[in-house]
Amino acid sequence: MTITAKIDATTRIPETYRAEVIPVPRSVKIELTAACDFKCFFCATGQNLRPKAHMDWLLYTRLAKEIREAGVEELGLFYLGESMLYPMLPDAIRYAKTECGFPYVFLTTNGYRATADKLRACFEAGLDSLKFSFNAADAEQAKTITRVNCFDAQVQHIWDAHRVRDDVMAKTGHRCGLYASSIQYDGEQQARMEKAVAAIRPYLDEHYWLPLYSQHTLANGAIERNGFKATQGNQGRVGALRDPLPCWAVFTEGHITYDGKLSACCFSHTDEFTMADLKVTPFAEAWNSIAFQLLRRKHLTKDVTGTCCETCVAYA
Image 1 (cartoon, rainbow, N blue to C red):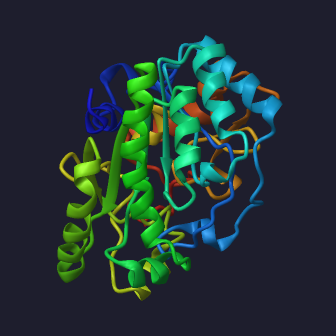
Image 2 (image 1 turned 180 degrees about the vertical axis):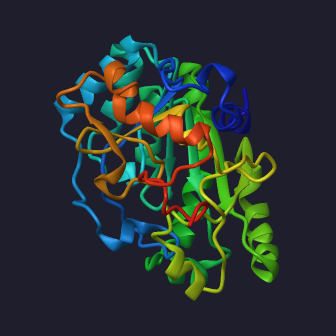
């Protein structure tokens, strides 16, 4: 299955998930770290709304095993932070594959610290999918967007990923999928992005475009100051956009923060979206907590007034 097919399966919200009490999700993301080395204008991570800490290893291993035993099939080892900053990333991948038996372990990275040695360690540990977030057209623009001189390293690491992936596959038989996504901007900027993407596309299995998200309106001001306009909510990828309500993040994918909170939002930079604390509540119970049930009820009626989702750009 292609990465876009997996994304579409999540954002589609199957009928079996359009209820208040639902099966465990096929996919869950665990945030190994809340830290990020970028401060992109379109991301609220740079606003330092929460501590930039790593997840405790014992908490990670307990949660990974617990959600697999609950029936989750796909584990994303990232959320809002940059997992290449997590010192035990290859160990986390290996634990998920060998100790927990996840059929599919995936990762998204900004690519800046995805050196050949780190990539090799991740591929050899059993990583099934690696996606690069590639959102600038050249070095000058990348520095403006991220506040880091990162563009050349990002491109080099995408090239390295292709070479190292094929080398590992030849030796072990294991093949990690290589992908990239890019923000679909407006006008001239989009033409520049398409030229930049053409240079990396031969090294990828698939590339796709994403809307410019507002991250629960937290990034709206910065996005507008940079001359762009955010889309409503999280409607998925360009080419398969979904209605903002009901929001798929409430129904089809779990999001766990570095400190063990189960969030109802794919952009949860604050605690207002916490549905349960997984340090004290089992995942299967938390997934259908009363808080989650009440929020799903509102989403199904397409009226989220009075909820944590009310101020999202889609409904403001």
